[in-house]
Image 1 (cartoon, helix red, strand yellow):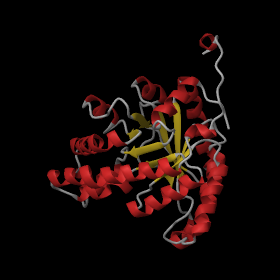
Image 2 (image 1 turned 90 degrees about the vertical axis):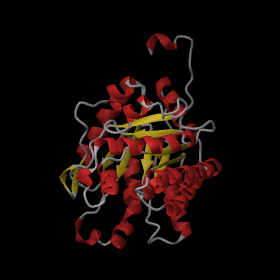
Image 3 (image 1 turned 60 degrees about the vertical axis):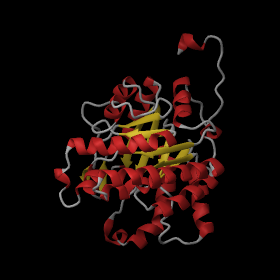
Image 4 (image 1 turned 45 degrees about the horizontal axis):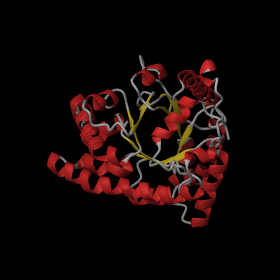
Length: 325
């Protein structure tokens, strides 16, 4: 457990609900969303189409989410200006470019040019998020950790919450078989959590530490989640990684029972909406199915999750704190 500064405590409070559970929605997709909306011609998806989709989605889900994750290109400033992000909903803004550089088996996360932790704090956001392609067993692991450390220091300087999302990937012909990759995924996710949370980050946005499509044993799934909880030195939430809603619902329950503080759900909530061409029909889907899904996940996390502050040491404040802040 570690102590947090006042700004970071306030940030985590604003990312969670009143009981300390994070029921968050991810809408920072760029390249993947263009592929979903554009079907055969993603390059033809316009800037305004991307903004409009995020605006409509945010308008529906934000009242039920403790926080929303948005990107600076199509979402963050646009939705604030459109007045669709409620003042009571936390705002996380991503730092990274879409995709990666380097080799497919040695991926390097690139930051958006002309964008920074300082600017995210300046715009009034609650937290900073970094997606990090990461394998502990690659030659670029040290470089990736170095990026996290540098950005963590910037977040400390700005006193803003830092959320890191490490994502594993396949290496070699053997792992190309999803069954083989499923066998090593628990160890990858758990070791990654151990290494990433040794750095001064504030929330781990973790992959589910198994592939439910191949691992059917409920006890083993629960054990992997408990191992992940032990490995993480900071509050953690589970990400949806594009699985369908039914699978993600199971993952959230297992993760929260093991110690997660909630979820940060993206495509599992809303991916079908991208295939509905009629705006009227899409809005009905968002207002009914998507809203119902988010409320269901929030209820699940509230029932089983561990408040984020349970993994944080209490900060004692003396009368002179403002002098050295």
